[in-house]
Length: 427
Image (cartoon, rainbow, N blue to C red):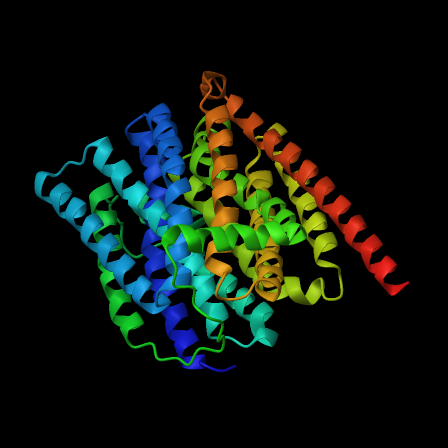
């Protein structure tokens, strides 16, 4: 693999920033459920933030295809580090943060995600040979989810602290040599801010030779965006696959930020360490998927592989709807990790093989925009007061079952269409 050192540094920077970001993004929803007791405020804020990213995502895609991906990493990390660091220092000085400043950190992190991950994949495609795309995407998934395991473990410690030198995490009790005090939310943000600045230093050392040599489009912003739209318009199969295969990711994001904290608090009647531990199981599943999915599903048509994973996770969502058992919850989180990561690897490899690198940012921004609209609809539905009554949040998982079955049906019809077309061509 060419540019091996550049890829390793890219992974290292992603691990360091992802660890602290992961802790913050686990801590914030739990903060609004358990500490601030403001689930409705968080859901409304999340909806507004998601709506705002609809426009930012399209613009970010045009930036990724126009400018140096390395420089984009440096500038975005600098902006996030300074913004979150300022809020953390304010909170430390006054020993207090308002809910608006806490949600501001959540917002800037979400905005960063909307340029960070498309830029990461585009940069990876730019410096990797086509024959290594599947391996690259598996590596990205494994390193990203390994980081999430650590983030979940640290979040479990920092959100609740320890008592009598015992830590409950992932359903296990671990004895520690000392007790760890619960961290304040602004202390977690300060850790987060520091990692952004460390990442800038690592990214600065990246040296690479682009593998892709497609022409960079230099027209106006509108013209560049329209080129991306027109490409997908001319390739409807890629468009439909890109949208529908993204549905589990859309639901998973809403599940993590909206359903999960209330589900743990109101249905399982459990504490913050159980909530954070679900991230550990999710990430273990995603790591297993990153290591095995391309091997296990080798030779299986991409459409069929994605369909099988969608049906698999729908069974987990169904079980989590009706059973308030911790072992089912943890196994369900494991299955969500396996399937979401597996579909993401298959999906990204498919798109890398079908979309040129000079269009990948704008094309994926179209998919992201549609994905954002789907998430907005889901968040709006979950904001209905019904879901905040007693343990009704569990019915959110039944929505996931419906979405997965419908998505699998659309992909199967697409598979039949493509199979029929290939048979006609052979004749």
